[in-house]
Image (cartoon, rainbow, N blue to C red):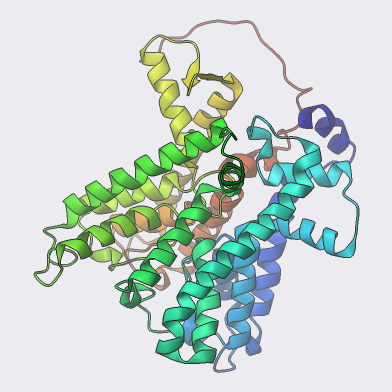
Length: 465
C-alpha cells in the first residue's frame, strides 16, 4: 500500500520521506549544538566551542555517548537538560515526537504525514503493516517509552536517592533512565567512570541491562510482546521471532566468549579479588552493552585483543530495527547469513521459520552490510591518515570508528585525544549510523521511492571466485 502512493506523492514535491528524516535529524542536531554552545549551558559560564557542541549534540541525537569532555562536570543543569531532551528525541525518533506534537495540538495526519512516519519506523519491512495503524503505533510507542522509563527511574531512585540525596538522586535517576533506555551511554555523575562504580548493586545492574535490552530490540517487538501478554492466542510476527532469536543468540555467544577471553586478564576479570559471579555478570553486561548503549563495566583500553575484535563486531551489528540503537541491525545480519547458507546449499530462496523471505529484502540486507563495511573501512583509512603522526594506535582508531558508526559510544582511547578533523569523520559516522546507512545513501540519491527509472538490460555472465 505504501509503495502505491509514495512515488507520485513525493515526486511532485521533489523530496522523499527518507530525505525528510535525514534533514529532520540534522535539524535537531544543529538546534542542539546552538543551545549547547550558549554560556548558560556550561557550568563555568564559558561558551563551548561550536564544534565541540556540534559533536556532543550529534552524539546525543544519534544516541551514541561519545564526548570530548566530562558531561557531568562540564555542562550546567541547563546544558544537561538540553542534552537529555536531545537523547530522548533521538531515541524515540524525529517523526515519533513530531507525531506526538500533532496529536497534542489536534492536527490531522495527511497521507504524506503517515508515509513519512511509516518510513521513519521502517514499518514497510513488517509484513502486517498498514497505513491506518501508523498513528496508533506512534501513540503506543510514546506510552510504552514513558512506562519503561518510569519503571527504570523508580529502580534507580531507590538506590541513587540514598546515595546523593533527594534532589540530586531523583535527577540522576531521570537522566540515567532515559539514557539507558535510549541506549545513549551518557551519564551526569561527573566522576568520569560512568556507571562502573554502581554496577555492583543488583538493582542498578538489572535496571540498566533491562533498559538497554528493551530499547535495543525495537518498538515493534515490544508491542508484539505486549499483545502476547494480553492475548495468549496471539501469534508472534516473523520479525519478532527473528529479533528475539538473533538477540538471544548474540547475548549468549558474547557472554561465553567475553568470559573466556577476559577471565585470565589481570587488568579486567583476572584479578584475584574478582569472584566468579562478578566475572559472569560483567561478561553478560558487556555482551548486551557492546551492541547498544556503550556503558562500560571496565575500561575498554584494558581488554584483550580478542575481546576488542569481538566488541568491534558487536558494535557493527548494533541493535534491532525500530529500536533505539544503531548499527546495521540484527535482522540484516541474519538475512545476509541465511542468504549465504542458501547459496551454499543450492537453494533459490531464503527460508526463515517456514516462511520465504522476499528476494528484494534479502538483497537489500546484503547491500546494507556491504555499504556499512565500505563506510567503516573508508573512515578508518581517513582517520588513520589524519592521526598518522600522533600517538593513536590503529586498534584505537578502529574501535572509535566502529563505535561511532554503531552509535555505541565505547572507546578504548579518549575521544578528546583525536583531532577535530577525525572528530568530523566521527560526526558523519554517528549521523549515518543512526539514520541508517541504507536510508542515508538512498536519501541522497533520491531513488528510494522512484521505481519508474528502473531499466532492465540484457542478461550476461562474468567469471567470479
